[in-house]
Image 1 (cartoon, rainbow, N blue to C red):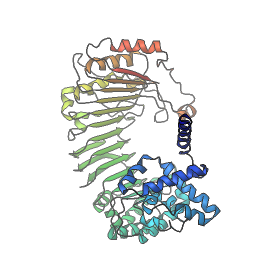
Image 2 (image 1 turned 90 degrees about the vertical axis):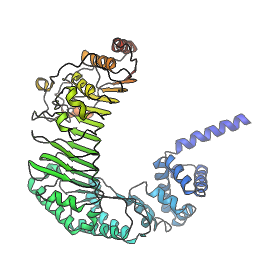
Image 3 (image 1 turned 180 degrees about the vertical axis):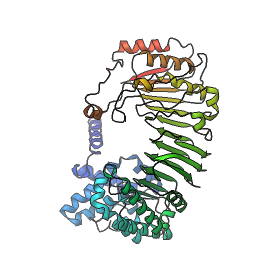
Image 4 (image 1 turned 135 degrees about the vertical axis):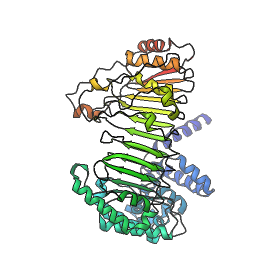
Length: 530
């Protein structure tokens, strides 16, 4: 009997785990009862214990199952739907609703009288639709924002307000006024705006960018209370005047994160950035001649992707807390950057990401003694989209100059979709560098990761050299080339080199022995992860 009970218990457990990922309306009635009883039991415990248990459950179990139950039952009888939810406390329902977008939460709450007031009790208001959905529902964003913010209790803190909307003056004004009033009368911890023009990059001319820039400036001028409390601002396809961006930054006094996508102050203009609270700055495809970070005492993360010209793209001024720097460029102009000069004012960088977009290497190898002062705190280095035709051995100069690096990750990939030239750059992509000191030792490198590994001298020789130098290395992870299904479809005429990644256990064992043969101290775990 005990054996049979154990078997039944095990069978029921496995069945419940399987059904846990499906919608609640599809579960057997006895399992539904058990779920409701479990929720009821949890609701009687302390709020802290309830929050901890909820965090351990998948979002789709907490959200989709409960919400779909409401919809299914309301389609039958509204009374039954309300009856099924009547035993759930408000704080549990709010916790569930805050795990989906605010529009979905509002739509669900309409189905039950008990839940109709819950949207005004949400501590997170997030309206983050896809561009396609936003085209159809952009007016709804303004209406829902105003409705929730104007009727909610000022005693409930808004932990997060995130709104994505189009740059349509009338609707922007409505959103700005609602948010500004809420900031003046309610407790609001974080507020984010993601603003997009109605035209995307494909049909956005310089005249459009100027118009959108002026419309945004008017928006800021008319809704200064809202912008004064913003903590995050994401802008796209705008062209500003010379003084517009400094004026925007001075208005957004609480701003912590700023993102520009295809924005500029006029072609080849110089952008000067000063702000007392800014923590993160992201610039992608900015038509700036130079970006100068004059004074950003709290800046921690900086990303600059695809600068357009051959000038110095980035000047780091007063950035005493900068620890993460990400730079990506195709370098079709041939401009080479010296890290010793670029990072001269930012020796605090501990996480460095360099993306070569499968094109020409734009970093100049330097003498380790010159580079060492600016890489003294570097711990994580990632080199992405390294061209396949370029020897990776040049990267050794960074290890020599950065004694505290713990992890080095290199992705070697001619990713056709990301390449801008769409032609081989074998004649110009190689880097000239002085061979590293064969006797130098690195005591802190623990992990080496290579994507795009091939069984040739370029890779095996490099791994051997790193293992010889890194006396305490623990793990080497070698991956085959990454695959992009769109590359072959978009560029069928482009030849793809055959892969020489090891496939058999014999090939793997042979390579392991070869790469560790020259090391007398380090014996890392070498993993081939195809």
